[in-house]
Length: 296
Image (cartoon, rainbow, N blue to C red):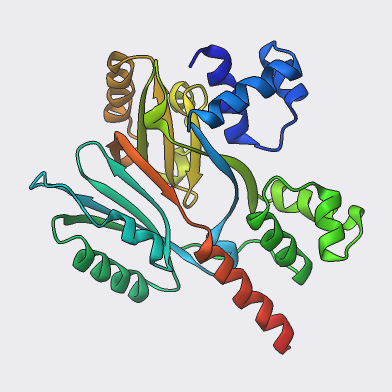
């Protein structure tokens, strides 16, 4: 991967619906060259797919992050089982054997029950920490908003006109409501990345919690803005970032910055082996909300 590929990946992670021409103008390539490079990144498995991400709290769910340590350094044989669990939103396996699992829960009690089920599943691992993150909804969502979100989760690359036709809505209505969801940060478009397949960089995932008043500290810009190829905001103060650096010296510089920062409450660093995402929990939440509209 060269600087152009990295630039393309960075832009698509922020907005995967950007046109090749728009990306080309940003990084200094033609639209056709961008298309060819995206195709190459897809064939290499670096870009594994495209995704519509919704903010769970706006749909009545809390996020829980469960971090398991592989102290025995044994091979975890049943990671694939995670794909069948209806509450698992994403998981990250590390080269050290540690595993981070992100789940959606309706309450603290439910998150604890999920943690207990995961402990039973991963007998080789030890649950080091569970972070429970609950926020109140900040945006009132209409039935049309839910239908648009539901459609775009299933078809993240679909055009506005295609969505309008499928949902029997006007193109103007879909465009206006979609823009509102994006502006309110309820919805965003990104790519699924397998960082372990990126050559020429040292990739790592960073889970961190900031102090609320310091979450926009500019000292973090060197990491978050210039080297992060993917991010998942869990709450206003908790984030997961996928970061690529040229070498381990740069990674060490990042960690020193984190260690010396009084605005970081705590953090974890994970070097990736495999990243898995699952949209079923969010689709289930939307279906539940849509049923409420039908019953009222």
